[in-house]
Amino acid sequence: MSGLFGFITPGPMELVIIAMIFLLLFANRLPGVMRSLGRGVVEFKRGISGTDDGDNDKDEGASTGSKP
Image (cartoon, rainbow, N blue to C red):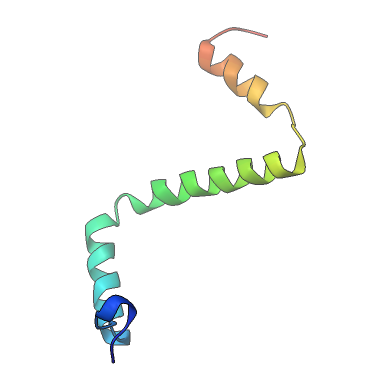
């Protein structure tokens, strides 16, 4: 059966094989990607709610090396 734009859509077994190849190629980068994705979601939720805990001030001071 044809899928989108006339291409043949992969079945469940093909998707499993593609997922396994993806994991073999990118397994070492996956934790870092998930960590940054989680931080992005937290920042997004913080921005939507409009609350600022002041964590950014602490992080900026630590990164510049200035003492409070």
